[in-house]
Amino acid sequence: MSVDQATVRRIARLARIRISDNEVPKLEGELNHILGWIEMLEEVDTDNVEPMTSVVDTSMRLRQDVVNDGGYPDQVTGNAPASDENFFLVPKVVE
Amino acid sequence: MSDLLKLTIAQARDGLSSGQFKAAELTEAYIEAVEAARALNAYIVETPDKAREMAAASDDRIAKGEAGALEGIPLGIKDLFATKGVHTQACSHILDQFKPAYESTVTANLWADGAVMLGKLNMDEFAMGSSNETSYYGPVKNPWRSKGSNADLVPGGSSGGSACAVAAHICAGATATDTGGSIRQPAAFTGTVGIKPTYGRVSRWGTVAFASSLDQAGPIARDVRDAAILLKSMASVDPKDTTSVDIEVPDYEAAIGKSIKGMKVGIPAEYRMDGMPDDIESLWQKGIDWLRDAGAEIVSISLPHTKYALPAYYIVAPAEASSNLARYDGVRYGLRVPGDDIVSMYENTRAEGFGTEVRRRIMIGTYVLSAGYYDAYYVKAQKVRTLIKRDFETSFADGVDAILTPATPSAAFGIADQDMKADPVKMYLNDIFTVTVNMAGLPGIAVPAGLDANGLPLGLQLIGKPFDESTLFQIGKVIEDQAGGFEAENWWS
Image (tube, rainbow over all chains, first blue to last red; front, top):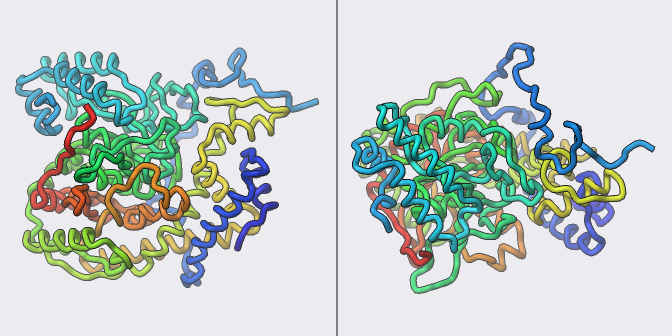
């Protein structure tokens, strides 16, 4: 499988990374080179093999469904590039 | 170099507890060495005031007879670990100015045991790289140089700052993390010891996430005993990380010095790669001879899916990274680059905030997870991962106690190597011997074992059974004793 320039633009859009027109051909080449190398996996017979879901044999722990942290909105928003009265500020999203 | 800087952690611990010197003196010696070694670019932030404060508190506790396991030991912390109120950016521009309001579990464990923080260490951006060249703060220089050359070499990556700082004696030990080889490859490149523990041994809470099913923290240290001491403090069972496994942390140091007589060590045929340099090949043979001479039984084993580990990794790791790094959107922390609307704000922020390699991996991850490709790539890779793990399980079921391999396919290479720059896959191949271990969740240690023809350090890797780090320290110590230690000549201060 390989990607074309339209796909490169679509991936960048999905990944929310702006790319300039002159970056597209370079990325197309690089991604295809990496994807071409990855194609080696097609040699492996994976019929009747379960995909890995957890690398260690363990079961998830349950905890009490209680509030055990919080109550410091100033700290939560303390690193925000823009905030006001403990709210994150973003550009206008509704007209 | 001050004599205090030559001490291992074990020696410094003894000197502090017997009152030969104060924690404040030890810390002061390191602070001076850190300042004098800025040419290496190992530290991106120095925290001398905090170090002095912590060392003074250590001296108080020592005087009261309340010393912890790492009391007064000055450490460097990889920039991936959240340190309360102190720069934590995973060496990325996108976390610009980020200072967490919390402490990672790993560093909290170290401070609880009395360790002292010297500063934050350089690394590849978001731990993505094998040369420390993807850092927003520039490359780290390896303290080692080829015989008769002044050319700067990489310290490996992603924990390049950690390995460099340990090798250059500008910290007594360092924290590091390993997703595909990021502890073991830099350790091998700098003549230091690095261990990636079993997945689930060390809490990931408060460590900036790269690929959550592969990431594990571990130490880089000057010798095997120091690595054992550090891992004992870093490891814990943590309710804040659901993948932290509920098994008591053993006293790893107790394994050191025990005989390996009768242990079965596997030598995997598939690690003998085409075009392997003679130096690596002969080092591996030397390691085999050392272990046999020490009484271990050497057996040939087969790990047939070895060569598929790296391509499968380059599906799984970018996929998880694209998901983990979605949180950097210019809203809650770090850099924000304005745009016409919210989507262009996201796009501008992420274009400017992430470096080339991180962007490339997010793009690959986004593609392999996108509609129509998920089964062909991600599910296929996770199936291959099952087979890789099964290969190891078969060997261990046959009675193998540990597996011996080379740590890296070469010694340290030059900064701005043109071949690697031109071809990302060439750079990825650095992890060919280490990445299988992450894919299978196993522990792996890199121990310095010799020098190549240019006088550069090379390492051997031991791979163990899940949660059997003790055996790795035990066998690693045998290699260390046979190989002897390796010290870089000081040209930087």
